[in-house]
Length: 246
Image (cartoon, rainbow, N blue to C red):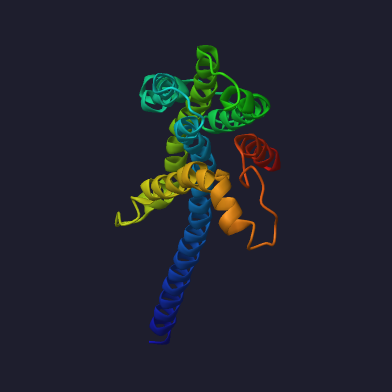
């Protein structure tokens, strides 16, 4: 009788310890994947900012009295993001093994994009300066530079979509229910939306001379200026500084 009670107690204790270990493991997994979610959102934000800047250029060109035909020429710069399906298999097939299948493209795209931003920062005012007569060459060069930036962002988006699935895969498929399956789409939509807003609407708001002089500078007791709080040159340099801080 005593032996049976001892066996029952040992079995109960074993089940309790097993349940406790499962809870601890599950909590650690949730904590880790929560960090991954915020990390992925951050990556999608910095991915989308250059795309937002690219979309803001036509509005700036329209204020600089650039012909509609030239604005239409610039619109070709946005096309690479719609055509990323063409080189997506190459992104998945070729990589540097020591760096990693996904990190190879994410890191390299970010780094090259930062270098291009530096080149653009030194030339962008000349390309869209309203005091200079615009030539076809200027628009073609502007479209080429931003087209390359959008191409890099599209390549990074392909790699990041796959990387996000890799980071979240263990958490998604260990769970018996699939309520957490849309987490990757959440990271993409939320981060990409914020990044585009910052690069497009946010940039245009603070680039506006009228908005800056009427609402922002008086609040901080600053004198009016002939330019907004930010310019394309400042934005491009800030983008590079952000990459260097990574």
